[in-house]
Image 1 (spheres, rainbow, N blue to C red):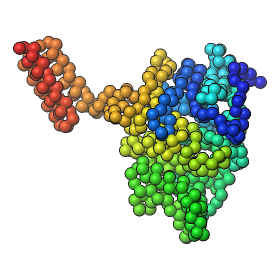
Image 2: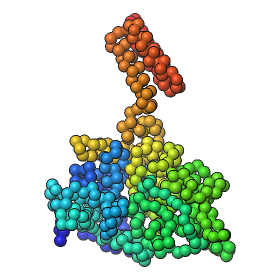
Image 3: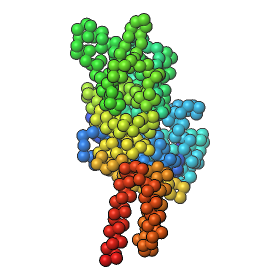
Image 4: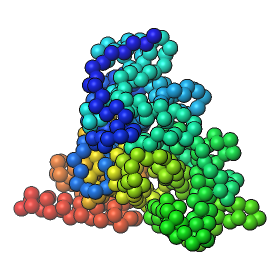
Length: 470
């Protein structure tokens, strides 16, 4: 038997975060890691001072291998049932347990201990840890409201117990594909089940083994048309709401008019229209297929959940974990995706990883946690608040340590130019150095930006040397 002890406050919520009395703020406040992945120890407080009415956003940046996804998977695991163990699949549990270093010692104070604690703003916390008996991970002390949620999320069948919050996770490595749909086929899969599998193919399957995004869209279109035909415009608008929001959100990101349409003859068929051009899902650009996959899946799950209250769908509180959603996206789309999601879900707490300066510089008042590798382990080097007033070049420099503004050849030529300039400043003037500097400057005349830089530098150099000789 695995034993774990830790000091945990008595739960004041019981079932209140699933049903019952209104709970305090549902917000992740702190994460502690021990010997997981690249981290020896990590104690991370998530900043909360916000100055806008959009979603609370936390962005993890840093080089490859610095532990960004490890943090994301660990946070998501707070809501996961941790009951599925099929190592041949990319399930969240497997992605996390592979990062555990030790399977001996079950106490946080022991050196050979791998585990994590996620704390919430209400003072509650949950944890999980390595097990030396079965070489797996186990939940430790968990508040009852999260225990209830995990239990609901672990079942295939649709839950009947209302929820007050939800947690969902996605990666840019997803896609939507064409599949057979019916005019209306009710979906009976639990909308919480599999909601934390970052990588998943969002394709309908008659066996229910895949997220039935296509069928959900087809259902809404068919029900909207039926309600409108019956003269029930109020019901028609209800079915229309999620579809219109999805079309508008995707359209805002890609700067095109997006429309889903359902044909019934000769057989039910779902199509997407971009600027009035009909396209099959299989021939859409990969970036658009990825966007449609995770955003439609997100809306489908939120819309199908049984909620505890009657808050509008897009005003609900939930946790969203996004792993490199910029994959396959053009920089223009990268620049638009996060602001669109933040406005669409103003009460969400969003955690994401990215390597894109266009994502990092796309919203104001998000928090960026810059990770760095030091002596074989990862640490939080700096924490920034985003400002869209900075340039993308400065965002790449500050958040991603990309100092270079130009390609490799031009960077080499600029470096040679600056080296000769510095020799003139330190060693004094000579005809040979001036000739060498002019040759270096001439090699950079081909482009407006480098030409402007070089000419300004030459004028400044001439002024300094002239003042020095006077």
